[in-house]
Image (cartoon, rainbow, N blue to C red):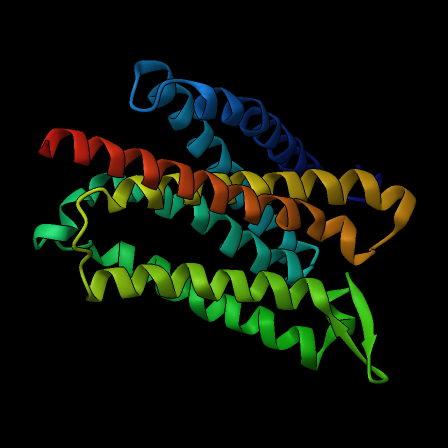
Length: 238
């Protein structure tokens, strides 16, 4: 903590750290437990609300300090957990169900914020402060660009889902899995940035290594369960 910070900022940071630690511990339990079971639901719900606390405190801190890069990151990283949680209540999209107005609002805000984050990586990398590299003699914030792109894809993917309902009734399962793992990648990113930056500074890989490892893991996990569900459908049809 910074000694010159106001007391309320230090209290907020303590809450932020406590929520982050809670989520960091709960996510693996929910991930390895039987999907849909009581343990999975209980620890998954605790994780979601811990991530909600992380996002709210991060947003307030980033605006108060101010660090606008972290404000935009807080929006897109929380949306992964939010959309993964909300999809559990939108399982009927494939048969004509409709999202709530706040689902639309969250997706649109995420796209707009992430677009700004993406553009700032090119136009004002010095304001982003992290992951600045030189491309053809021009500085860019590769971290801002990558996170912005991911956020745009996440929010736009939800909007597409709302406009064009899926045909597969198990769509929600994969959206939930991918969103929750993506949210945990964001938590790992924050942990890495806070701790490794002490030794390596704002290097791009300090922020991006969880994404580099996590995205292929999501793809492999998704492929595994799609094949598993396909085999189950074949057996039931036989």
